[in-house]
Length: 143
Image (cartoon, rainbow, N blue to C red; front, side):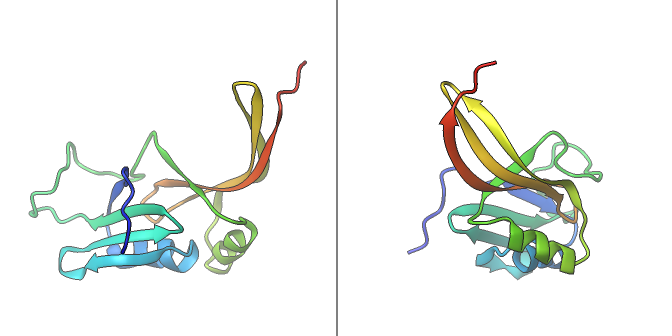
């Protein structure tokens, strides 16, 4: 049985097929289910889930304002993956540029630092997607 997460963002997209080529073809998501007649797909990557819905001006969708690219201004979606290297390679094959190059970053979380190897790429509509390979934890470095 497919388990849906308690929080799943639904992204409005201009072209569902172009978006599926990115999310499925480049990032490795699977289509859990879709409604092609509605321009809708529910995607999953090892428990990371996102819904895509193609914008249809007369469909009565929940839009609070007119959409203009880049979509999703002010948000980035962090997705944990086993390793980032194959994804960077696949994006290169697809001739997609990274928004932020891959680097190792350590973020303080109370009394430890949490490490992640991360990069950011924009999807076809401009949503920022941050792919993260976990590096573990270490004590906070005192300066």
